[in-house]
Image (tube, rainbow, N blue to C red; front, top):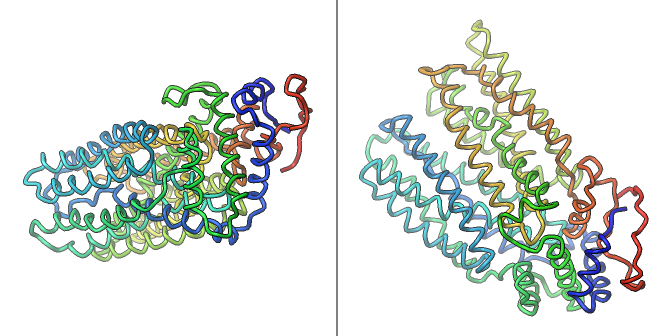
Length: 521
């Protein structure tokens, strides 16, 4: 059993005079969340689900719709993509600071208004320079969308709904890519300027309804607790729940938040980016960053090129594009299926199985790229890569969003997710430079053999996950805190019982360290 450290408990008792009462109420709230069924969670938190779904729609801005013409050179395309990625890094850092200071709502509303203005610059661009400026400026609000959508979902939902609503962010990515592919398919044969202006204009569809939804959304109760605004936090909880949740249950949930926040404050006083690298938070930051980098290291930059391999098989470009729409449909189904698998298999298991499967597919495509004995091999490679995309969106793709929101402490959740997403952006910049020469006929021209390159990255990711990725399935934030503080190894996370609630009957001065023993959980 892993329990609170004695010194931490002493400090908490000084900060919270009625600690015994708060601890008892917090334990009741945690037990209720553990015992709650999915249907009970939906009935209790319908408004939290609604507001989380609305905010997550903003992530559709995350991938800028590409130019439909052939007039932009490869270096310029890389510059446009990486210019936005670099600005996203700055936007993420700014979003983390602003969200901690002002809350989720003002930052996300400001980002939505800013992106409307930035789309004007892209739509009316008269040169590559204006496009680049628009991409760079869009990177700032995109940074906010990439962070706050996931952390808000984790803040407002109970344990049972947390994996569904955090991974719903991945579903919004898939929907956005499906829409973008459909728009590009529709203007594929247009030779005029509307071939590239219309995809930008489509993005004006989303901001207004999202802004309306966010105006009515409550602020994160966890953020309000960190600011000491407990009465407002309680009102926020009431706005997120239905009438079947009693006032006593609200008080219990608020007590759980207060206890968790004070516990984390005593362990790590600050909430700066530097604090993410101190003490036990260093390990949590490593896990969050690596988990998101692995999304790139799986080889999705290579595996998602189904259209290219089908064109190599002789498909007409328009038909190959149709297959890309089908691939996005598979990705959609994979993400939805992950909602059924996660409660049963857990995050760690899905990650490991997904990586192992994708590693096998990459090797298979690599070996199929060696011989030149059949015209059907590119077609077969394209088919395998469709399976690769389905596997990715069944496992690593959506599960990542759940992990990066569960692993950090609640006080450093936003900033840890910012650092993790920035690690992903850096890996993406590298992939943007690495993947084109792998496929480009005028460069390395590895074709299917490029699977060997990405299989190496995927193998390293699998090994890291086996030794370093813990299983947070079904654990409350306070329980995860204790397991990290007691330095429980990743492979034992589900075998050690975490007790964040110390005995309330003993005098604090005479408190002795509890017996630590392994216990199934």
